Length: 585
Image (tube, rainbow, N blue to C red; front, side):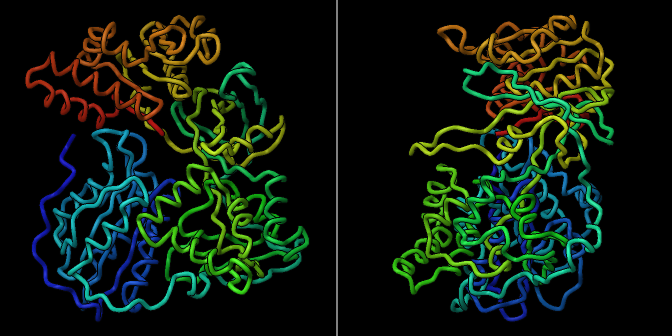
């Protein structure tokens, strides 16, 4: 793995808070970096009197701000996560030209610091996006503040922030808590629903469900569905489908009950304007209270963040019995690293939703729609690799449901899983597509090898069918049981493609796809890659990392320069687009 620790920062004098301004930028496909960004803002507010302090999405003028001439220093704190196998998030596309352009020197008044978020299961690609931005900024100059930070989420982020700014800022006394600040929203009633103006255009279109079929046995541990949809949207083999799920009627009613509202609360059609200097998700216009709960707010366990707990603390009625204890507990979740560990145990591991949290902290009192908005998190689109080829008139998805029982016996199911389970034929869902990573593999004129496990076979199937070269290509597939989750088994047999399958649970000793790569497949894979063939790997991050490790060993034994040259070769093929990894946790 490349060294993750950069050279120590050059000595710098303490920066006076007087005249200093700060912007915290974030980039992510999920809410993770937005949550870390909010966490930084909240703690900066407690550390010193209010300077000019803002938070923004990285696409909102980040590069322009870096080069803006200023009479006094401006600190840019960039919080950025890595997606897939070391890829930049799609939402950074507007600044990629800057990343890969000749280096322009930054003004001396531009201060910067980078905190990278990733998953250690990705091996060498851990926090790669953050390292790319850090490397670019190092070459552009300006004033670096602190070392490059690494983390897998909120854990260790506050420690990094304090270490980065300690001795570089003159901290004053805290000036109050985040939950006591004015609302970031202005909520106003529109017109009657019957005469409301149409909502603004959305990137999400209507798709009708054609079929929703469980393809694993009813007694199998996991419910996996093959879902087919139709809609006015073209796509290519290997692309990704993004869907906006909705909350179930059951969960909407549960929220109403625990929050003390009913379906007639806040009647009318509402508009929400963001007026905060801090980054806030927009809720849009022309929605009713029930629209908000059904289609906009995440009522599942993914909708509760550390900042949710901070906001809830501001609505505790301390006059009620247990109120002061509840407020102290809610604040403790978001003020220390140990508090984050408690949050992780209470929310993440036990899959508690906002409904569960409100039930546990019943001294929280919400009185207005503005109050409700401040404790809720917008639903984030869910992404699925498309399993059908681009030539098809339908979109097929292979969806594995996230459900189970926690360590303390709590049954849970993910918001999207519950949404898909309830979806019936002819139901309409909101979705769109985005480009995947496999275009060059589809176009590769040489044979291709596809390596995947579980539902990772979905994008591989899309590319294999799109290439229409079954006699040239090869599939290495891993599952648990040949009779339970060997997806598309009959289709592979009929197509004529060479398939090497490894079923991990069909014998005493467990075997995996990486075992094939390490043993039987060594000569096959070496000859294939060195011969210019395409490679596509898809599935869990641990599997993908193990397969890449074996491929590096194989190539390192066969090319001059050993493993170092093998690594350079794979990186070159990745940039070329003929060696592609699509992995997830």
